[in-house]
Image 1 (tube, rainbow, N blue to C red):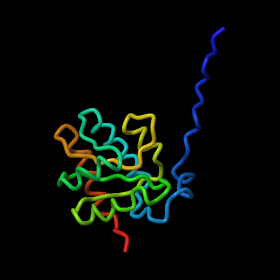
Image 2 (cartoon, rainbow, N blue to C red):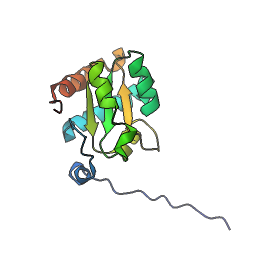
Image 3 (tube, rainbow, N blue to C red):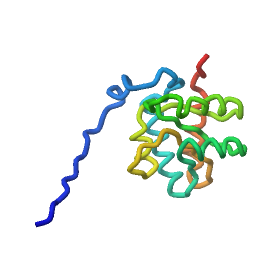
Image 4 (tube, helix red, strand yellow):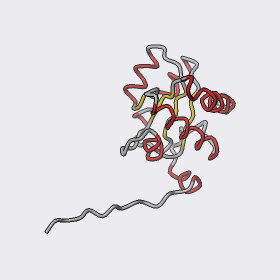
Length: 144
């Protein structure tokens, strides 16, 4: 007799339910509306292979001078894993923002694994969505 694996889907957690899990450094935090736009933009970027995923890869391409929107997960622990990335983004004048969940960020990138940081690069096929996200992320106030 074979065992059948039951799919256990965790119930979708709302934006408000994710907020208590945020790190103290998760500023500027994307609103619920902006988070959804960013997830959609990430999904479009994945189709064209225009994303960088993970701390090492994003850090490497920031140092190489690549441009894009950096999206960080606000619930990553320990903070030391990626706390240097916002400083690097500010030094290289890259827009960055936090979203509440690394699980949702990984799912938007088409991965089953949670992801703590993604860089979205510009591409002409989704330029409108990218430009809208870029404008809103740049409008967010930077932390002091």
